Image (cartoon, rainbow, N blue to C red; front, top):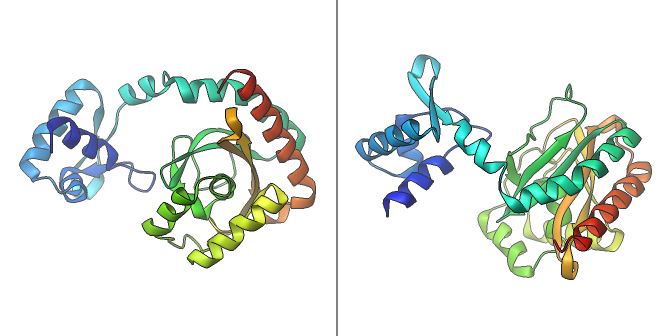
Length: 248
């Protein structure tokens, strides 16, 4: 493994469930010798890619640094997507008074690019966060219009249960994706988080390729697919048209 690959593995060890990791945890997650991890982590801290942080009784920990956030904001694809999506998301938030998600598919997971509204709602999603695609409305909306190879890759990676209602069998997922294609939207009925549901729709860019997904998320009692479905589908269509006009 090259030095660059080892550094990337260390950065990739962090996730939404483990935003702070000790050196021992980093070594265990990456499979690197502790001495090697210590040397590379020191260099990453010096560059601002990682930051030191007290992790409590377990000692000194590390978290992702502002350098990554600042450069991440410059990534053209996501920046262009966000710029096109934010006005649409604002309108959707105003119309529904709910939390609005914009997500993209990265491998077999979803990554949340933008989140607006309902900041008081306790949810597992966060901007820049990642969740397995089969367990989310936005993820299922994108998987439904992805290649068979992408869907199989998600199945091969496993279908972990995030809640008792998460679809956790290949057959169940395939049937769900077929249903989504028939209605043009996806539902997450407490599949990613108990008490929280959403309605999602795919966003298509040039050549009618699925580019992203939008969702309206709220407490299960406040999410009515019959009323929110048309709103999120209209927003997704509007965003898709803007993307296609921009060649995205």
